[in-house]
Structures are given as C-alpha cells and as structure tokens.
Amino acid sequence: MTNSRSQRLLVDNSLIDNQASITELYQLPDFFKCIGSPTSAKVAYFIDMGVPSAEEFKFFETVCRNKGYYINLFQSFAQALI
Image (cartoon, rainbow, N blue to C red; front, top):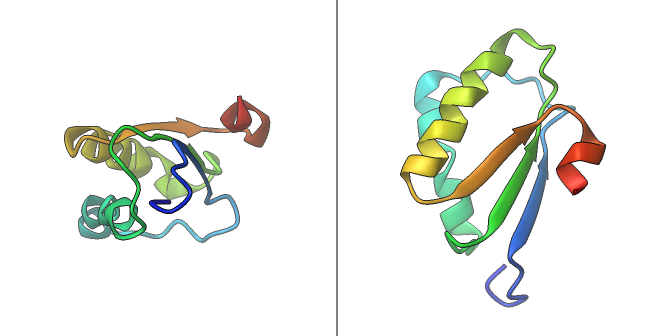
C-alpha cells in the first residue's frame, strides 16, 4: 500500500474459517502495519456474520481502532464497497 498511496483497503474474510483465538485477533492489526497501510486508510472488513466466531471480530474491530486504524466490519460485500 505504501507504493500505491491507496487510502482504502477491502479485506474479504468471507471464505475463511473464522476460528481465530482472542490472542490472534489482538495481533491481527499488525498485518495492516506489515503491508504498509497508513492509519489514515479506511479499511472495510467483510466477514460472514453467520459463523460462530463473528461476534469475536467486533473485538478485533475495537482493537484496530485502539491501534489507530479506521476499520468497519460489514456483513455484505456490496456494503463494504460503498
């Protein structure tokens, strides 16, 4: 992201088995830092809210915001693209 100067990032997590531990969810925002995502970027995170661990991703959203990333969880791909 650093080279492209992009300010928006879409993460599609809908096909992944969302079996992440709380520790893994806490460390996941470090991924954004690794790819060079600036904290000013807007991140749309698309997740299948029908899976049992979906509620835990609200914790992930809070952790991201506490680490300075502007992230929103979305239940539909169309909403995430807006």
